[in-house]
Length: 246
Image (tube, rainbow, N blue to C red; front, side, top):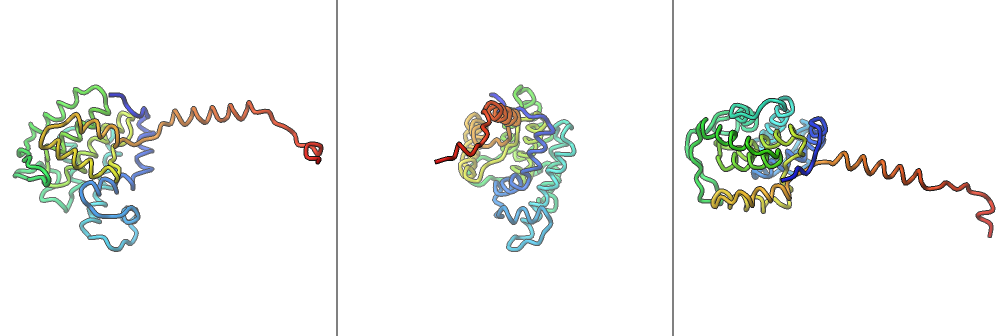
């Protein structure tokens, strides 16, 4: 797999912060949080918002705090403890427990797959396994999908898993994983298929093809240089009255 983007960490953080409302909005909708983009913006900016449940406002605010944690700790290694820390931000005052692995059985709607009750060892084995993947984009995608399937927590697993994956993406300048709204239904179908039938490769390819966002700064710089060179090469003509005589 080839990286779609080759950014510096600073460039990748700039992109993430610039589009943070959009990423939070799409991440919220991924878990069925029914808010509009303007409502999401208002919540993040601490403005007055109407027509949104208090619980949904909490979830959006928690996502904002979780992203802030990722930015502030971008150079820290991805560990079980770190993922639990992200979940503590994502699910604070929302889930049955936050920042701790679930200790009971959960069921996933749309699939008959029942994820085993996680342990520190099983969660850590996912991280150790994905660390062996050389390409960072692929590593991030596989980490996200495997964490989603493992359902480490009572709630907020998609949000937490995507943030963990985006930490890897940003660390390596690979862009941002974000599911477009028009691909949301298809993503959920592919995810359910992965849960039930272990179709990991299909899920990886879909995320790679449809769900990676970023800006190619080098390409933009090249286009700007080419534009300036073209403008430089075009001869300038001085207007004279004779040119416009009839």
